[in-house]
Image 1 (tube, rainbow, N blue to C red):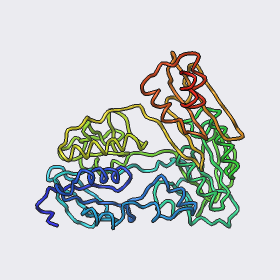
Image 2 (image 1 turned 90 degrees about the vertical axis):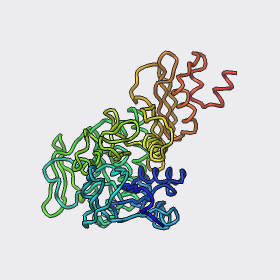
Image 3 (image 1 turned 180 degrees about the vertical axis):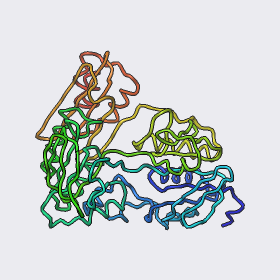
Image 4 (image 1 turned 90 degrees about the horizontal axis):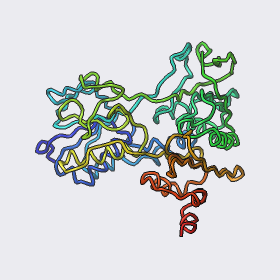
Length: 410
């Protein structure tokens, strides 16, 4: 393969944004036009991070969730370097430098460095036995916790990452307690009632919860021994898992002198402040907003692939988005504000683990929460996006699905 005859495209990072971009480039036969090389700081090939909790639990292997391995890259004619940390990016000479000292020239460069797990800045935060849950290295570290030690593992944060970590650990056989600062779990997606119902489902799996509390201090010397909460309670623990959010990984962009705010600032073409340098995924920021959901990141990948192939495309723009999750086997779907004011329609069957809430404002769906049964999620989201007016006599039928609603409307 004559790489020198083609413009060089270097992609930094091999997370889900980068993998989606690679898929989009392959669909557009980009290897006929570019010599593409991917530089990843991780030692493992491209895997589905959404399924990491199943690797932690032992239900899946890392190989089983890996899609972009060496075989895939060989088949596509794309070069890949694993364990290759990029330490410098020079947008003037258009080259990158790796930790091993290699200097690689590029014509175009894509930064897809993702995000880092946020850590609490509290006393004891650096005591051995304090972990995050973000990548396969974290999962491997968590698997080393002694299951024969009867003290619980304490997970801080009941967002998606925290609940995934708790699930994986309890499936390993650990006692697990989740501490969360809000009055409900998944507080960005669920209202109080949905949060309580999901909590009950997780408690049946062995996960315990302490809500409306924050960590003030971690106790221990050579290893974690316990914590003190902000209301003064003391809890014993053999390990701490911090799942308190993510921060865009902008270190390389900062070094290169690119425009950085919370994330690497990009325009609608995913172009950074430097010519020929693009960014996408969790590391980037567009119009003061960063990204953590799959849907907008996948749209970014499609737009950037068109941009690199010099094809006409609509610029990236913010769109209404929904959240679809699977938490310890329980399906969750939501859009809009979880505590939206308006006309509330609620159906609840705790015995089946089903909760549905729709909020209408002036006859149009403004928000929805579906827990346990999400089969009508896409239909409801379409009604939301299209701002469909729903007649007063038909509104309650929305709770029972598209087929029933259309029979009533006929």
